[in-house]
Image (cartoon, rainbow, N blue to C red; front, side, top):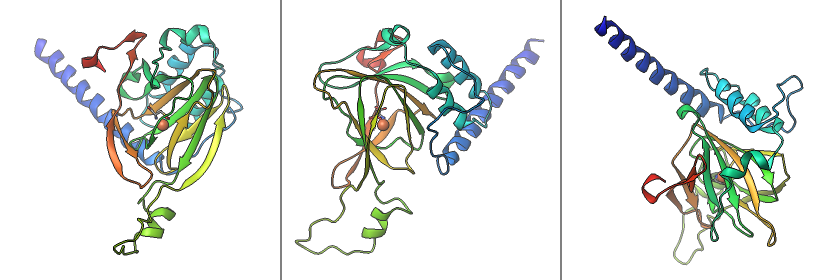
Length: 250
Ligand SMILES: N[C@@H](CS(=O)O)C(=O)O
Ligand SMILES: [Fe+2]
């Protein structure tokens, strides 16, 4: 009896692990074709509160074949209500903060990012994950760049066959492909196939708050300098579930 339930437990753990690997594989492949959805789906569910959003997201991630359009829809459908997210919104004087709202059973991360006046991120990628970014308060400006040295983009085409000579200026520079303001309740979407980005709060008078969903979750990404130099950066949490993290829990 004990043995039987033990082996059942072991099996279901293996099943769960397989399921996660398959979902991860599926999500990574979907970054090749998924673009973005600007308007909510016509017949999609209406999301009234942040709790409803979180419950609906969990449901969406139960199966391996996550409906990414539905994830976009859910993020779009929720209308920002500061009372619901205030407890996660913790600011730092010097940099934007990343505050974990929900770890999505290991399948996605939902975070609230708090941007002080003029705060911005460096140019970065999203570790082969999907990134949905919904504005909750204030303004953010997103600048996009081509992903350097990635097959099928012009940066790698332009430079891969060139030989550099002494005195040459390194031709590799990040190529900007657009700049978009993101308004409250809008959702911006990016993945590494669409490029890199850098996000900034352009206001010197007001703070901004955004809600980010990453799937699969990641704990490091790449950061790029103007000359395309790439380094790995660990991403940390300023708080988890509304509680400030200690340095060893970040
Ligand atoms: N992707 C960044 C925030 S942003 O600039 O899009 C992060 O998770 O820290
Ligand atoms: Fe980002």
